[in-house]
Length: 423
Image (cartoon, rainbow, N blue to C red; front, side, top):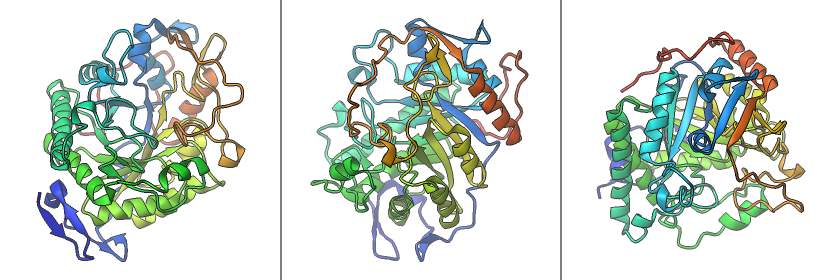
């Protein structure tokens, strides 16, 4: 693969060389500010579970009337939906689930058609794994497990290219592409893993990631990302590409991570954060403010959150380069905006601060199990009623942000929200 030398002596490898060129000046991007919001503020939701829940018999209601969940969300001011895909979900994520396979290209395209019919902005997250990829696990797909690194890079490029080509051919090309899910510690371990060098303040996370023998480091992580970015730019020119760091609360780690990638020639358009928990009040506000100052050419989003809905969105919206937010699986996760059998369809709100108890979403797979775990619902069929209090909260928020909110009785219109380009 081609190698280039940056002015500071760092090595830049791979696909990003074609789009590299801007350098860091005193660690800060010298390019003109171009990260400003590219259209209306995105009030979004990741609801990838909905089709498989519907196949299990889930139905959705607002004010006692059965409706498409997309219509319920749009009526409450949501204008964006994020979906996720896996490399071979039949070998992982969807294994053993009836119907499907869920989380593959075909099921994603089918649901994306509904999103487009509802006139909503569409984002796509690519998990470069057969199963969940998150801060605790970034396993290679089984078909890629034995590949030498150059072929692994090619596999990332080819898979990204094929997924986006299929969506474009189906008329549902995404408006935003997110490469990797919560890749704070890299992807496709161990090749693309990056060791943690700054403590997070979460002892479980620190114990897991402060030492990572065999990690490929930032050079290889950057090369893998560049391969995906090159494919995305080819298939969907002009469509922004985002990366995802789960520690939205930790500015020092975000800065080190972003600087390390930019210095290696990784050229992306926005960075998404997970915002489930803080170490101290004001952590998210600090990260967003510092990020906006240091990287004026990059947008940012709250790609995942659940509780503190208005607070998180107000923090993002306050910045011109704050593109929007996506509540994660609001039909039945954490502080869900739907109710089932008279109670929250999720597990309920989680503590705001680490000191108040670790949120499993802050350290997936590493948070200690509660002494008396709540029983998990295994059957996700049944009736889901939208919580009117949460719907009113989002309607008010959307109006305050200058977004058009449909009348309560309106049906989804077959149109595309202005301000977003489609391939």
